[in-house]
Image (cartoon, rainbow, N blue to C red):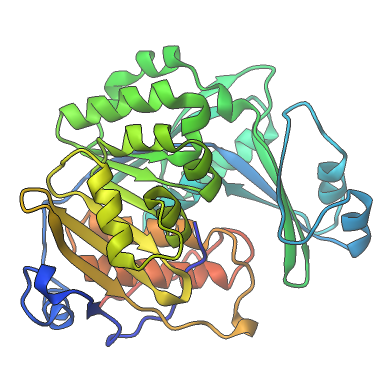
Length: 389
């Protein structure tokens, strides 16, 4: 997802299209008044299906970029058997860091952090990561990080396979990413069948868009099961190339999703309206989808903030668009853009499952994103607590 600049502004909410909102002439006032009020029942448990990945992060010299013919800002995908030596270089650095990565894994870690979850406490909510890993030290690093936040783990472990990884080389504020999807893309339908009751014991599910190219059948099955039981289904668009090159698969899952989350670039591709205004983009996306009551579209747009949109299928029009603005951080405050969108979703959902207003969801989403932007990788201070008053 796109980076999402933080530091919230209480005067930043606005009603773009007053005639489409049920909240009267001033959506900003209405949302501010309802900050502390519940808008829906709580959602006690959530499971997320995605790629368990380890980020290998190191400060490097520019010589490494030249040696491997890379470009700053690039994200490169290597074949699982094609180790070009860059990972060995990164891991040989004296201050190498291993941080759990992967879009949805980032989101649920931030979500658990925002909820102040701790294995030493009796936590009110249950969060589970579903995926596939190898039997190696990378997997153990992922497990340790998830357990620190009391996130439940439902991993298919494949002996002889290797856990997926992403190499992150950093020079000042420049970086490159080299991803190698290995075990994570081998999650089997048999494992899902064996654990279906545990999976369905959750009240909601996140489907990571990155899973759709290789695991559409599994995603369809889970989406249909949760939808049939009237449980919350959340789809993340994940990346522009996913929407562009796998649009049919995206739409197949989106049809049965209650919440669709992405950035403005992904939304434009899904709508087929490059550079269009938000109202047209959102209307087009909603009209492409099968009617579904209470569906929400959540779109981040960098320094323009975030949009939450609902659609009234009975009247065939947008019910409302809620825009939550965020102030840009100063350039010197931004350490790493990677994972900012994932962290917005984690913060957003930490309030959404409480039944909080969309105002509060966006507020904590932007605050969480702002913390991540100030750190390398998807990392955060353990003792930091959010105050939504």
